[in-house]
Length: 526
Image 1 (cartoon, helix red, strand yellow):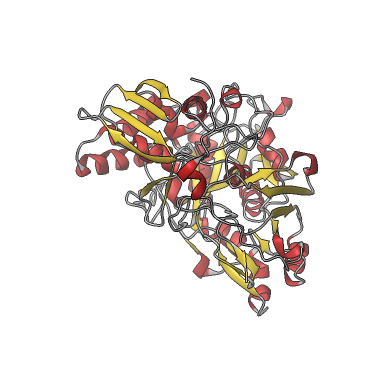
Image 2 (spheres, one colour):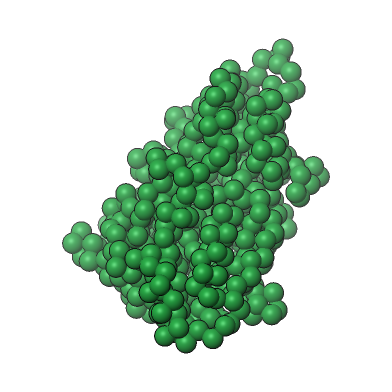
């Protein structure tokens, strides 16, 4: 099957016109954005860092997306069919799809893109176990045969998880999934301007003139990704006060994640709108490294969890605004279908009892290294709280503070702390992407192929499979509860509360889609 030009005839006629008036200035056609952290990794399959995923949303596209109701909608795909036995999915690409280098998007590009994603993403690793074969029947037709019925398959490739199944050209998609790609060629609404990329300072994207949006209304990750700006410039500003001042002065248009204590000031500015970075909420995570002492000892992990008071963490992130957080002692987030607080007994927040438990666990002064970002306003405070907590417990603890990019690189190390490894890190995840026993990657027991920290537990994985393959809702509920109970027994991580992150933008901007990431389509300047 040879590459061929697909953007012809009716497909070309669907391309939307440029929306800019001739009289507009260059500044009016440029959207200036301050991201949550520095962009250091450009491969959204290699890393789970949300700043890299946001980069991915700008330049790549997906076969399916979801709307506000979390319903699956075709995106690059026209749609799909399922065989009578429920085991063969046939996905048809829509016409007019082109990569940034002018080549058409083919099924032969999509198959290795999905396979590479499956090697890294938690939910995808589970789905891939039930795939008998992936194939490209022709340039526009993808066929996936399953070993058994698996209704979650289309949901998985539509919603993704910690990473997103972005489609890349075949030669890039065949890159070893445990190595970063060296080219940034997508088919999405923007092109990455490589020669203007200055790590730690700026990132530039230009409108992709060949992108053919869908005609439906844009919702979450689905619908018409219509671009109203010629250029998007990311300005990396680590200092929150400086970023807020730039927003007030009109030097930037959008500040992705605002430090909580600056929100009252920005609310007073009539030219600024305060929004939600994700309406579903975020869930704080205290993650252990399970490979090395002291946290390869489950009793020590339990002792730390026993001492955690979620309100301390939430107050540090939200500026003690009770409307912006809630205590949630659950592994599957509160507010999701399976989010039951089964960890109340395991998380009493009792420091004295925790000290006693730590001593009984055999802790003998082993050093603990917390890696913590100084430039990530909704993660850095968690590390400070944990450092203080572990000192009160009597642990030998050090906090290593760097930028977020360095944290994301160091967390991949499986070495001991003496050789550059780590003991504890903190992060968060949106409720919508960790709401079931397959997608909750922090609790999955996948070991060496799992999320950083490399927790391994066969019983956890059995509960995950039971949920995945359950044929009734009561069976799914039982499997989800068993999955959570096991997590509170074995402590792959400690949940440290559920909260909202505020975003802020100039009131001239309209059309923002508040969802799981920063999306640059549908936004316009009034």
